[in-house]
Image (cartoon, rainbow, N blue to C red; front, side, top):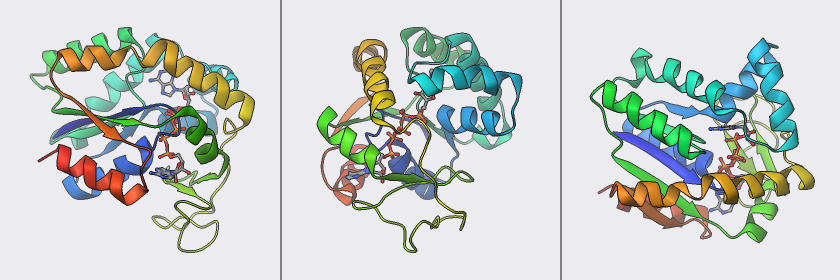
Length: 213
Ligand code: AP5
């Protein structure tokens, strides 16, 4: 199953992608997580990307497309994958189509979580993330079993550097201007599945799996 989770920052893409990876035994490919790992490793690409991420702007297409090209070529993607946070521009979407065409693959479904901006701010303000496995929690709406400890790998949870009010506003602006237009791109391909992402978490999960039946 080749899937994509789509939506604004904080819409719940990463949270729901984890459930998809567990059910279908396919990897989650989060460009945000890959970029944060490159920053932690202090690679040249990571240091360049950091400037954009700290400002809440999109990292240049050429960097992101190169990352995805390498990642999709890895063996664990042979039986499927969940794209999380990619594509975010028309150029990235077109590059993905070409990559998939060239390898005889296709996207099965784009699962799109619709959440109003006011709710996004609330979600991001209470988010805690695992720096090791990328899992995402919320102090109120999705607390970990043990305070500030990741349910999946046991690492200490942190607050992401770009989860501050000013950066979130910029990320939302970038979403509406550059990423939301992709909705029509995937509607035209007939694989777009809109989901009410503003519901309680378990209801969003339920609707997501129903969209895949
Ligand atoms: P990235 O890491 O992809 O961040 P994002 O898209 O901004 O998405 P988030 O991770 O913030 O949100 P999410 O939708 O995964 O929500 P989550 O599940 O955590 O990108 C970061 C940066 O990297 C970008 O700004 C850009 O600079 C760069 N970048 C990455 N990819 C790029 C690309 N392709 N091109 C260019 N640049 C790129 O949920 C949020 C919170 O809500 C959590 O606390 C969660 O527990 C809670 N929650 C989830 N669902 C619910 C629910 N139903 N009810 C209540 N709370 C909920």
